[in-house]
Length: 277
Image (cartoon, rainbow, N blue to C red; front, side):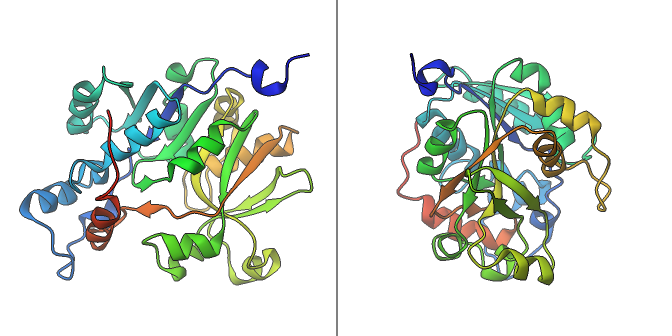
């Protein structure tokens, strides 16, 4: 009998969430010295296109291609002409790049739902457009069966990222069961949750591998306390209904491009990374 890896089709499609408002990036920061071109892109809020030697999104596209992805869909807003131009200019090399429109910024689950036609009946990687995930973590993610997410080790995330520890403490915490599957995930945990989960609980950075069941789940969740439709709530619904979600452990860092103060550190960290589009 063939093993599960031989029976499971390889992951070829990825959805990159680029619809965010970029509120923190738009905010002027006198301590962050950006060149005029970087400052202009930062003011537009389109974080993924900030030049850090080349557009930040180039590094994400290249890393996805390195792990076997051949089709990428950027979820954008109707006003994001620059991202649509980027997709058209980048498509045709190692990957085909398209876009899907999220009409209003209603949350990450709504953004994922916008890519339903692109995903079809295939599993898809789902990533943020303002994070650079290490290729080794992405390779482990696409090798997982069914649905999965990367669970980052907190200590490694602090030591190997440009993200300060106090921000990492606000990231979603993951509870893993005895089978290595997701038991629960809590967005923006309070002090009691942090204490209950413990210092060794892995952290989510929104690096997902999702089956087509996610799209119906996105339609069945209610808005969170923030008034948004959250992908975490859609995944929690699937777990509650019995779908296993593998937690892929990663002792690695993630580069975060949320604010102007992140640009210099990200540019330095990416300076030795080869990009092939």
